[in-house]
Picture 1 (cartoon, rainbow, N blue to C red):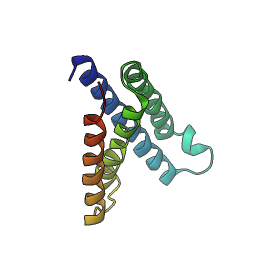
Picture 2: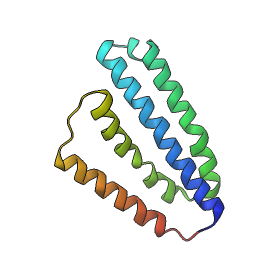
Picture 3: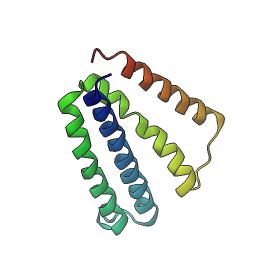
Picture 4: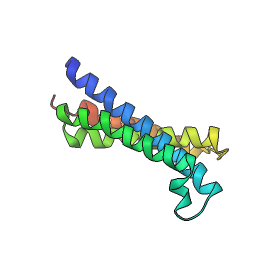
Length: 117
C-alpha cells in the first residue's frame, strides 16, 4: 500500500476518535440538561468542537481516498462509542455488542483491502 493511502486511513481513524468524543460529550450533556441547553452547556460546546475538529482529518482523507473507502472506516466510530460508553457512562457491554464490534472491524478491513489504491 502506498504511504499516502495509509496516512489517509490514519486520518480517517483520527476523525472517528473525535466524532466519538463529541458524541460522548453530548450524551453527558443530555443527561444533565434539556432542550437547547444540551448544546449550550460546557459538555455540549466541547462535543460540538470535537465534531468540528473531526472534519479536519476527514477532509484531508477525502483528498486521497475514495468516499466509498472512507465512509465505512467511519463505522469504527461505533467501536469507540461502545468502549467509551462502557467506561465513561457505565453502560453495559454484552456478547452481542462485542460480536457487533468484531463484525465492524472485519467489515472495515475488507473494505480497506478491496480498495484499488
